[in-house]
Length: 384
Image 1 (spheres, helix red, strand yellow):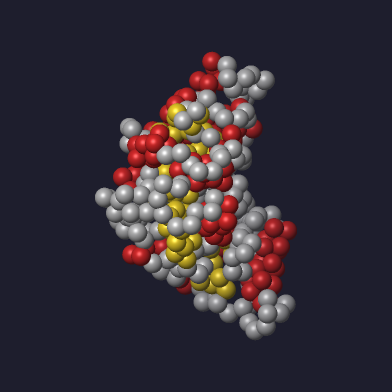
Image 2 (cartoon, rainbow, N blue to C red):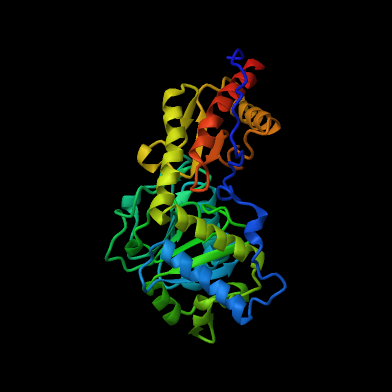
């Protein structure tokens, strides 16, 4: 294995992190030259830029006309917490968890909001919970794409159209790369730093008419912090859907996100973004299929993520920590070569590799990465 020659072709862009994710192709600081630095986000021009973010996001996601979108604090985490704190408590809750992020929402729902009527439908890394066991008379909480496991729900066909509860989805590593049937989703949250490679700290929340109705008619039994508050004095804050934000956004980040939205339109919109992610992930899937020492962490091919592709080693050898030693060796070696950054598995996940293949990653860069993965594996195993 240690006889492989070092490759000569490097990825043009070595950024394969699963968050913050790679910037769009061709990005430079010049993209921020029109940013409203030094201007208030409450000024007419500031609110106009924020409203443009909302309108362009609504259009790019091809949302139904009566779905509402807002910019919120705290990245996807803040957006999802906002959904939980404002909307839960009216019904029992089914929480689906199959990796770290899903279990975080379990912890918040049970330990923090203390919802007594909460069921946890869990699965080990690499698997989905039993979707047939979900009770749609209850509110249902899930990540559409489990970023830390590389396991996603295959589609929305399993979600009941005549449900009584709300479907609340953490969609941050799915939107703009995976198709979502909006008729089956009432709340979706995401951050600018994921599929479109924007800057951190800003999140967005998408609300269906059913979610809006819940907000207008349900009062949580717990106090809702100002940072999460979608209602005021018992009334929906409608201006949040028109560019008025709860806290001060970075106008540099706003400009950066608008730049990436414009890029997304220029390459063909949502269909093209999904196709880019599919094509890039397919390069890795094909390599995994023909490589005996690596496997996709997602056991069922129908659940394999096309964004956060997670891999495990199949012949790491004996002894405790063998997989972690190989992971650390490959990650360190490729980083030192300037070939790939941040491709180790998420903390808490099984040891292995995780390569981001979202819409801003070029297929050619993943193609160039593969010989380096083989070379690095040979180098690390050769020192065992």
